[in-house]
Amino acid sequence: MAAQTTEKKELFESMPIPKALATLAVPTIISQMISVIYNMVDTFYIGRAGNPFMLAATSLSLSIMLLNISFANLFGIGGGSLMARLMGQQKMEDTKSVCSFSVYGAAAVSIIYSAIVGCFLHPLLRFLGASEDTIGFASQYTFYVVVIGCLFSTLSLTLASLLRNTGYSAKASIGLSGGGILNMILDPLFMFVILPRGMEVTGAAVATLISNVCSCMYLLITVKKASGSSPLSLKPSDAVKISKDNVKKLFSVGVPSAVLTGLFDLGNVIMNMLASAHGDLVLAGIGIVMKVDRIPNAINVGLAQGMLPLVAYNVASGDHERMRKVIRFTRICGLTVSVVCIILLEIFAKPVTQLFISTTSGNTEAAAATVVLAATFLRIRCLAAPFAFLNYSSSYCMQAMGNGLGTMIHAIIRQVIFYMPFMYILDKFFGANGLAAALPAGELFGGVIALILVHITIKKAALRFSKKTESNE
Image 1 (tube, helix red, strand yellow):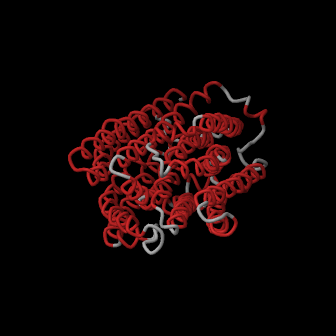
Image 2: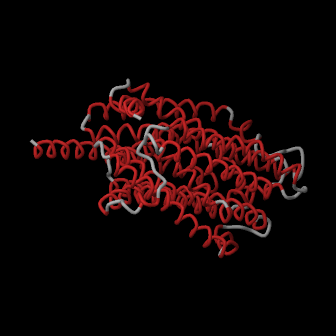
Image 3: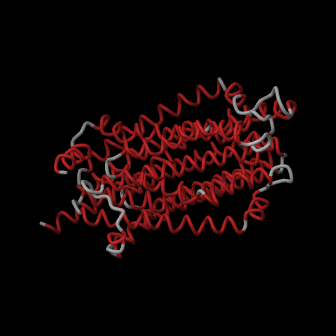
């Protein structure tokens, strides 16, 4: 245990920043990319049926699924960032209690959410814009992935975040990546072998459910095994030991993080509702693009999540110079990735979108029209990548430093003040293309605000630590 603790201290305190960030971020990026790929594989296989209504249905289900991530962020980001700060202060018993509380809290909230969705599934899908052509497919997918599977997907994301923030990024990646790889293997089996033709959406949903269960089981076992030599715990007795102050600190970061994801989900709901008003083909096209433009987001979110524990640990230990270097280096990496992704997606927009729907089977005319729409939307939306990175990285910085209020303000300004109004305004004046342009416009203005807020947060963190040091002397 001593050797392992020393190794983790070196990672957080003295390892060269590029190596430390790579150690934490590369496994996270891999798991993020595999998650994106298996979501794309779902769309790819469903698209083999040549039925745009199936694709439109999975886009509607995505909005309901994304709330799982909100619950995971509530306890995974809130608990994980607090655990990293407590480790920086060498408070290992408190770290264990936060870990256990986070796991059981995530489980309880996800079970309640599953029950609510199950009771109001059809009215909810109708509200989101489901038509007679899409509601059956959307109901099938949502039932298996959310009503039955919410507990497993939420716990998987929460456990991975807790592992990552205590230095076990590789193990977290194995759990999430393994589930994604399994899903890719099971998709064609359930969609085209086990279930009959016309049940492709159900097959994809069952494959996702099974993979999430397996991922969750692996991560639970991993945390259990690591708990003997690390500040991790699954004991209910540790959960009830958590102090009121730590509960407050957990939710002060976790709630804004959950709100951020919830507002992002609300933005997708509005996007789907406005897109469906232009017809199911536009909705299907937007659905394809929302899968593809997750590629730069996945890389950049992985970078930001890898950065978070380094920033949290060093802000708590007082090494603010190292913290600033971590932030600067992460920004260089993220902006570079974003620019490269823009170039590639602008060049290969049509071939990329053609991967997701067959134009040689099923309703070929509708499928071809969907590809044209999707390629246009992709060329517009991919321009958001560098600004989205600045938003993500700044948000994670503030969460790492315990600035929940700043995270909340940023989330509201980014989504409610800029992105959502841009959707209505640009859609009104420029139609479906304007709707796609709302993302880069909103992320641009949100990114400017994010940089201002994170600069203020860094200055306040340095001032707080200085005053604390003076009072101790």
